[in-house]
Image (cartoon, rainbow, N blue to C red; front, side):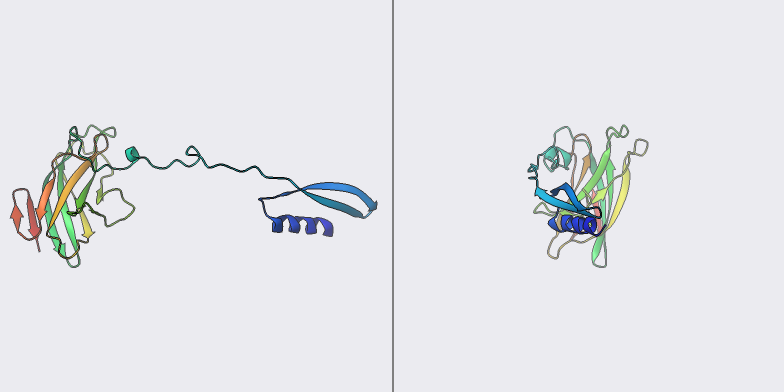
Length: 185
């Protein structure tokens, strides 16, 4: 029994990369078993794209305008709250159900940076379901931190079929209102 514990311990120390193959040798006495180890080469495992597919551009929201895109931002209300902002964004999109609906909107800095309170979200505000019978609809997102010195942001909407490219709203954070936005400081 002690010999088997010793063999298992050697196997664990040796690791899995070069696992020993055990061969039993005839015993020299009725209570003793001799064991020898032989190293068997392990084949190299080659990483492939099939084994670990990387996201492609079609898997991620695209910032390239699409002429067929029809998720439009029709109105934005931005309210400064302490260190951050809350945006109330009205979106119009001909949602038909789960196969085609507006799935998010972004607040974008002039340099193209998308502001996200939740860094794991694909958008500033993720929209989790279709709004077939509620058009246009307004959804809000707080805790949006706009860097000091930024005076304008763009708000854009995304739909799952055509991406970005519908009507966007340029919000001037230094004025109380514009044609399709209001700002409260």
